[in-house]
Image 1 (cartoon, one colour):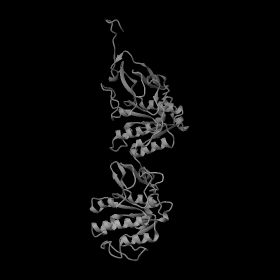
Image 2: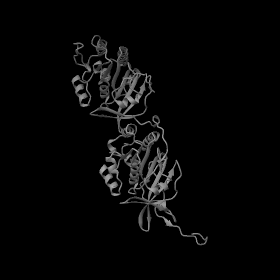
Image 3: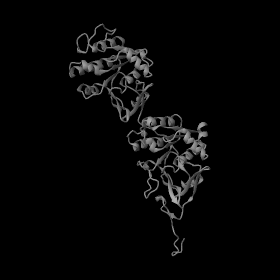
Image 4: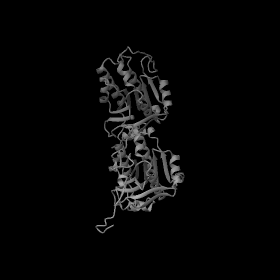
Length: 487
């Protein structure tokens, strides 16, 4: 990990600085590699667009200076004050009147890209240098050996003059490209995949970094990176006191309520009342002084508020007063890293102590093929480590059946508490039941109770005795045994 006395240079991308454990070590050379359109130049612009921009240099071997500055403005960045050295083939620059073309080798004596860059750096001594892109140099080099020799000479001289260097390069299988990571002190790879834009740090001499792939965006604000959530990096002291549901019969069922800092899974088929029960738990917690946050992947705000209003839950009023927070999440617009970053902000900056995710099926839509189990595990582990109480709403895909499935995603191990809501057919009517299947931190009532949602609110009835087969959905009345003398 980075120590406080270890000086770092910020890249200008906050999330990237986090996974670099504070930024880049000064006076070293870093390779930014990736395919076309992955944001290599944008990252370089972030690095240069600092409060000391006049001390920085952008060396371009491809795009003209005017185009680079225009692209920066369109990305929400500014290269105002940043010096640009255009050494692209066929261009004349103010550091020399010579021109050259693609047919000339860049190591021709007296007319080389290498010498033009070094002459400028020695005269102006910039603190940060971005060379965009080194791939152009490869095309002008006579052979692989000459290319490596010139790049190594260039990087050593630039860092020796006190500069911190970023070089961009198109990622390819060419022998020249494969050599660049060995010549650099750090390697940051950018990729555009089926899972979105992903950044990976594969090398950082003299420092640790967060491994794995991290989601990033390119938009009008330039580059924004969302570090992948690593739950073991976060912790907070927590007291496992109980939280009342506000429903006396449900508190009896759970022997006092669920505990703070635990994960509760509300499991049941569609329409059985999982979201409504979750809203009851969240509103009661907010009324007791918790800062509660509902993330709803399935419903928009107006629909959710209307449903709650119809049963007397004052969710809308609590949101307006700031006692409770609600966010409708469009899963197709959010990457899991992006969603986790928003949750972290709520917990670490706003002080949220209770989070509800409704539902896991909706959350899965943001996975784009990634492993839901892994993502939910990391998010719940982080929240529990931070002392946050979690409510997960999970839909099972069968209405009734011989097997009482808890979750379709293999996530029952994540839950400290599992509350099951189920349908049963009784006297030709479809009825609902509620029961506790699991409670790690204490005992619970091992019966099923009737459950209903009315205009007066949620109703939890008396235990259902004298029947068997409740979990199958078609219960049978147990006949009294007169032979034994018992009822």
